[in-house]
Length: 399
Ligand SMILES: C[S@@+](CC[C@H](N)C(=O)[O-])C[C@H]1O[C@@H](n2cnc3c(N)ncnc32)[C@H](O)[C@@H]1O
Image 1: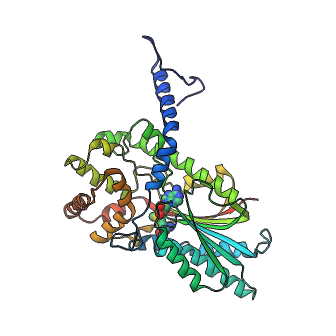
Image 2: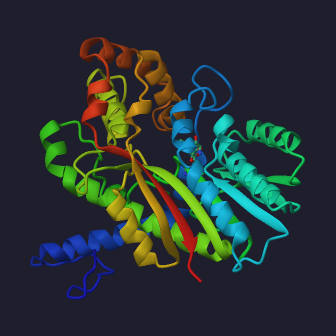
Image 3: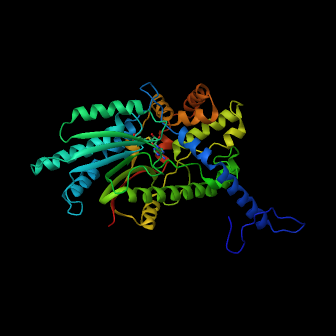
């Protein structure tokens, strides 16, 4: 990193005498230049590759997302309260049309679960006051490689099951770390189980080629605080950008309800245990020569689990939104505890990312997982020791 006291060099330090910080500065600057040269294609590549397992097969996200659906249902009271607020508030002079969106919708039943809750709440609110409901435009977003064919069918079914209010639907492919909607157009945004996915692997690690999960246990332990700090920094940058972008897209008084995988302890001491399990299986595969160590070292799971304090701090620092409600929920009651359901849950989420990076390794991944399970038993114990928490936040755009 360049600092005020050591201006950034543009040429490598030469001569017999130069300070270590000069060399580090130059390496950092060279890395940034390289990053800028590579960014358009590598950023695009990471966006393209991220998706859940498609279709309706045994390991698809559509069939293996009941755990996430349990978390979605916990958002219901917050969505209902936001709708009442939006529909009765003078600030948003009763809308004749409403635009609602789900960001990171994936595919399968969960893709329309949150918008369905919102539509029902709109219907009930207007029925209560015996007024015609507004027309509602529902837009579902995910990255371009998402299974939008299945999403399209879910949207048609949603339209057909509701004739009041009038519902229009659309799909918005793209990253929620970019502008997605026109300025001042959105009334309500929902997002579940998605915002812990980063825009990319932490720059501080990729630039310096520092593995996130070193195969050597001692090195891994020693590096962990620095690695977690790099992840925290990337999350802070991404989440702040997300808030800035959405703030531009909301109408006055617009509302946003999001849930994401977080942690219950203030100081991060480990990764989300599910990512750790994936890394452990991969490290066994490296030791057995199934995957290349250099490939393993350059693999970064692009997720981070913040604490509620961290989230609050970022939201307050960014300054566009007021937190109207924040809940920290223990997701362990909805745990997935049979070997096959846990494996399918892992595959539904991580298989596309793993295949993209390591190639056709899933058969061996499954075999290694099965051996681990039979040797070490259920992952329940790890689950119960982990600090995983679901963070649910309701936000209102500040005037
Ligand atoms: C675990 S799924 C959650 C799906 C659904 N919302 C649910 O609760 O079951 C996470 C989704 O977020 C999407 N996602 C991750 N990063 C994204 C980004 N930058 N922009 C849009 N979608 C993203 C992934 O492609 C994936 O479909």
